[in-house]
Length: 223
Image (cartoon, rainbow, N blue to C red; front, side, top):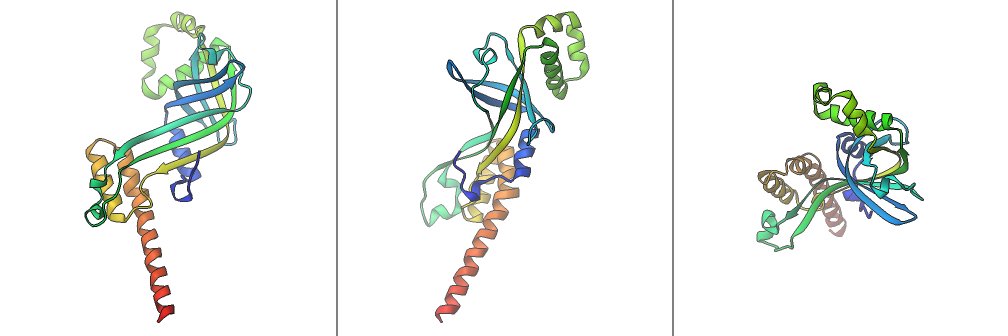
């Protein structure tokens, strides 16, 4: 993934995204070719250099039957949205083009398939437990859960490298960043609006202050 410096997430920001359970695309390559599956993951701080992502696949999925011939890639998209130039206050004086903002993390690592139903069920229990009380699975009953577990395969990706990118208007004027944050917030993109206000806006302010200081320094030299 191409990541200009001003769009790069810090290691801490990427870890925060990985730590929140969410769906992501698991991409692998095996003898039969490329495979991709959208599945929910949860992260644990053990196993790989950047922790481990855990999920499960239905046993009939080809991705659950073939050992990858290289590293696996998990693409975890936080959110994305169309950005209209009408949201830029500076557009009044200098018309601009629309763009598309997004926040994503690409996590690479060694994938291990766990054919053991007990391992797979434990992973499924942990993921369910993040969202539901224990009583939800208790009502299903152990016998049925064990039968269902035979139909899934546990998956863990021990992360070796993580690349995070937030293309979130950091290179725009601060007033434009504020305009986009307000617009996306009104549309329900709260996570993106929060990032714009908490990260992009301070970055844009510092960037424009630096540019102003450089222009002032250059002006003094020319006088």
